[in-house]
Image (tube, rainbow, N blue to C red):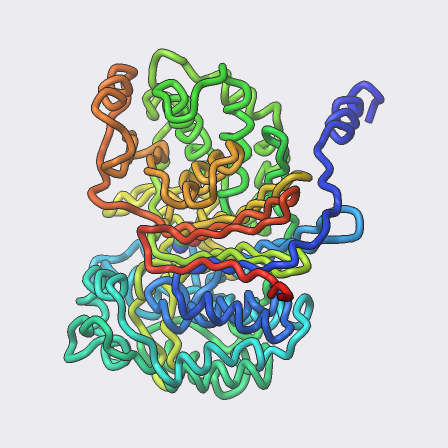
Length: 562
Ligand code: GLY
């Protein structure tokens, strides 16, 4: 490489933001989608665990008490921060499900007789990654035995948890599929209907499966009696899992996406998530455009135009980087963001069809997120999923494991010719062992003054929600506003700005329409963001849970002597 070519890279390195070590927060914070899971996180921290032990407790407890959002039959991503001696260290654990070895590119094309098999039942399920991630965290990052960190989840499965309104609403979306599977109906319904609010859901088989994981680690789930039950139960119901699928499953540690924006380093999810790449394009692109007041029509227009472009890249270029060439470095670069921004017309929306041939995609909407930090400054942002509410609505008999339907996140028909027009790109075509493209975007942003940790469920809207939360953090808004701010979203196709009712007033709406935007209210609020802020200069933690959900965020301060 010539010196001339190397110079911009060297300059970029010299100019890139370095975060220096800061005193530890000496407080702890947990924000999760369920109060029982938040309590589990604090309990493990109080017992001497670090953030990674607490992450095991929160993730496993959410798997029990939020069976509609995540589970040990699913997968997800954990973004980790360790304080380091001079500068923080970030790691990314990819526990995304993998396609079974017997899966193939066209397996859902012939859907004439069973159009729902990519959604319901065992054929919809990828090989779960969450159990492997819990073991990996305990073995490589935690300080407590796995059994101790899993104890709160085992207790919740054994003793039961009380049904809340989210549970009942989400059963409403999936009732027919849940009724169709005897084991799912037995465990999660009452008389084949949504259980009454406050009824207890007990999961003794799931408690046993968690115990096997607690005592035998990886082999407790991926080999031996639990694995045998999983494979035979899946096959008996028409699925294609084999013992080797489970034996071969491994989490992958990846380098997170990292870039600078507005005086912060942003650390986020790499492929197979689209999240970090999209955030890089939008946030760095926004810096190239004329400054606009947050919330103004021009600011909204700029964001929407950048979302439109990065979501198109997502549909065309992104997939599992272990299987396809993803031009990550180029897409995350400031130069690429300049190109994106250069295409934005300040006076006119660009019709999405002008950006190239259509590449629609679809993605499940239910998932969960938690954010936590311990007294030493170890932090975790984790987004976990089983895809649709209650996943594939198929529970493997004798295991309590409700399976994901994450196979639906692949492009079911890469050529776009199937009868459901569920087009997608070759980049995200099904292949044995491949991970489906995801929008899950656990994210941190940090500088010498603050650390922000955030994320949310919400399918393809995850990225735009995290974007809006990130902008609030950069604008030094309180953490309660990051999670509660009204939301809008554009994902290239369909070519509409999707909005919560309170996102725009009538004047803003008219002004956006005059720029050529089509606006579609989504009919209900969306997302369930869990976020925390460490203000290093003041030595303060604050945490917030999305008011749209039933979660709980809390900070525990050191006990002060009298
Ligand atoms: N299944 C939701 C996601 O991965 O984004």
